[in-house]
Image 1 (cartoon, rainbow, N blue to C red):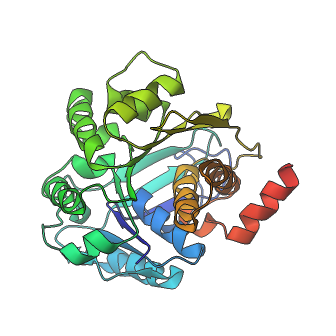
Image 2 (image 1 turned 135 degrees about the horizontal axis):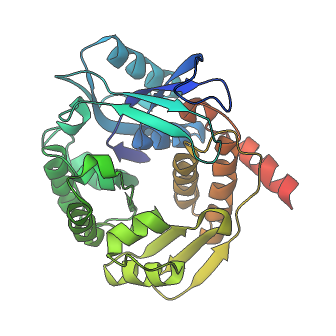
Image 3 (image 1 turned 60 degrees about the vertical axis):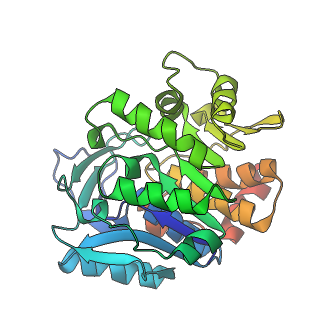
Length: 314
């Protein structure tokens, strides 16, 4: 297996009327969602064998997302059926660069109740890339399951930490910092935006991506990717090599899912053995494509689409 992601899954309902808020009458389109789920789908579109460790409710929406994963070529062997309802996310695109969304998920949603031992030690050690997120550390027993899996993997490359910070999942910001910071020494690749890097490192007043990268390296991260939005992305290696990769400008239709597309594309580059700068350029283009579309999972591009955008941007 090329990639195993861990964490959230949901049914996403996307407002189809641009510039309409959730308070306005509008129609919605339904898709499978959840950040690590989108990453698995995105990588599958590049031809990789992927799976997601998650859980759905024993309901019609749970059946829908499992069927969607199958349609996208993502293995469902680690998708459990648990108690509670499959989460729903409603998203509106009143402002393309700042979409609004509402989570409808129980405090003990099925995807937070994954027990230890669900994935064998053999799979944990042998999968080429393991992807986990900051949100997976917020709620037990999932947080304990993830910690055990990371200890078993022992920082084998590539163990990728999406610093993903969702305030609603945590009792307070300090709790998030302590858990996310402690997990840094269990990964060798970290990806996050400025706000996520602040939470991870505790450098709350910092703005410089290079300072964040150095702090991540001090915590054991070998490859740090700091996303600066319109300012581009800093890629930093523990050896001291740093390079800034500018973003690609597109007409944004909906910013949701662009980060997931970036992650899937960056994993693709890592698995292909590409130069890190090349991987980030490819990832930037993939994120730009999804930002120009609606529906995160359905919007994930193919390699040909990404390379076409890169060629046109030269």
